[in-house]
Length: 355
Image 1 (cartoon, rainbow, N blue to C red):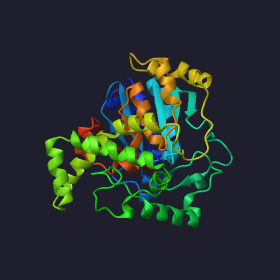
Image 2 (cartoon, rainbow, N blue to C red; image 1 turned 90 degrees about the horizontal axis):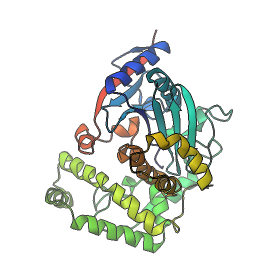
Image 3 (cartoon, helix red, strand yellow; image 1 turned 60 degrees about the horizontal axis):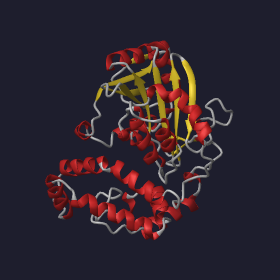
């Protein structure tokens, strides 16, 4: 399956103000604080009790919230913008096919954008819990979930077995000896369909990164190759690889943007449409970011939508790693890994319905 990364970002507030506002919102909606963790089903986006949020320290003017309840994140964002009288923006990745944002200001839902040029509003009659697939929000409820199509799963497995990425290392596998099951099926299927030049370019990028690899990372890679790396070693190496992703995104997009087979059918927004969205986003753009630059990034199509989102987030001062995070995906990273990437979650709020 592809990525269903999602996160809320609150502008110009501190962690305590955001956490206090969340507690107030949840109390007003019949919840009380608890020490219970969300169920596995809840962690993957389904509405349930308990519900939990990770709240970050402020960074570059933003406080980030990762919410276990994907179905109700939009309502939370709207209420946070009202209580704190500020901007709140919700980002979603739809099965790696497209990325979406919803922008709120002072209690108003002022703008929404989808990189595919389409969006089904949450109030649509067709939008319900059945629209959730593979642990995330499927923005287009008429799409058939891959879990309902055994043939699609079999084809993805075949693609994985056929996939060969012969670089010194690559971020799609934990090591050169990783099994096919370690590769995400959707990612493997798309990579397997790429032209040979694309995969050759990936190998070249990996080789370039290895050449510039810091000595401590090179030592860990040797341990990984010898199967002597500790879990801590592997976590450090994986975190370092993740920090190289912006370079991969830029290089691959520039080299193959016109040749890549994109996931899903797209009708990308026109420049005129993008400028209309930027009229709302302009107060949030980092100093020095031009409208032309923003239009170019927002209009970019990518094989993996999270990569395109990772290029957009820095334009508004948000850490690009959030293009790959959600409440569920947070558990895949240690506190130390996130800290090294510049992301620090301070509060872990948990709520359950009052009895």
